[in-house]
Image (cartoon, rainbow, N blue to C red; front, side, top):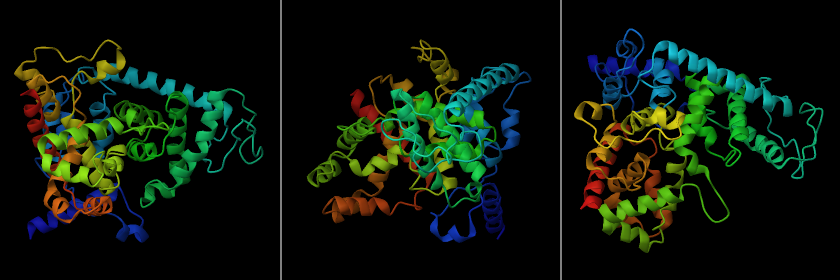
Length: 416
């Protein structure tokens, strides 16, 4: 009976952080994540992990996250460390200075965008095109005096704004948070600024799903932007698409190699069904399982993955072009500062390209459906249907642990 009430209390607490619109309650995947005393990283444990001047004991934090995730009250600040926004070895003062510097930088970038499109920063966002393909403004009065554009970069960016607006309007619409136009505009502003800065890739559908949790978890818009920017450093290549290739092509290739190595029978079966390119896994990898999990569970999955992939050199690798390389000899104490996934790589010394944890997560899903796929899948539609059954039925922690097991087996096989 006591356990029942604990579960009810945990669910109610989570619902309070991420309230769902009443009319959408039946349309969302079931949430499995529960706050667990002694396992979930709590506010008290988080604050206790800092020294007097602000150095963070990252090993202690990683250990707790990998056991039970992060309490919703501190997810935003914890994610900033997991994603490499800050160095655990920095002090409170150093981080405050860096945060202030980044906020000023974001404000300058936003002002630059606002000068071209005044709607940015207004608390509103666009869902209609503002210029033609050749740079001619479409509707001056409604969109804030949009001037004619001749620069290719400016034209492409302004064309992105329409698509970003359409995607923002349908992002996480089950959540009460996005009933507010101001919150939707915040998401639009961040994605618009990012598209202006990253003129190589700009904006691709799906980035909205990656950015949305940062907007919800981190109140300050500039801080949310930099958290998203760091996330995109990991995922950026997923969104690089051309006429001849899709962004996650290399990850799908790695997935194919992993399944061929650990389960050749299943790989052969999928190949016989013309599924050897693993295109059915495109969405899972593109937006990190956002569609397969409830909102709460997807946050839990992400922080588990980022904790397991954590490398203590991540901050320096982003801040210093030549920094971030893993030292050749890492002692046991230093190894504790690595996540479980990254630790396996360091320990085996396997330096070849082997894919992110998300690739092995997809592999773990395929392995759990192994018998059903071999027995029932007669075509690719069957494969998609069988994998579709995982929505709302996956346990994030079990899936990650299975992915770690497969990764270890794969590394061992490749090394030998």
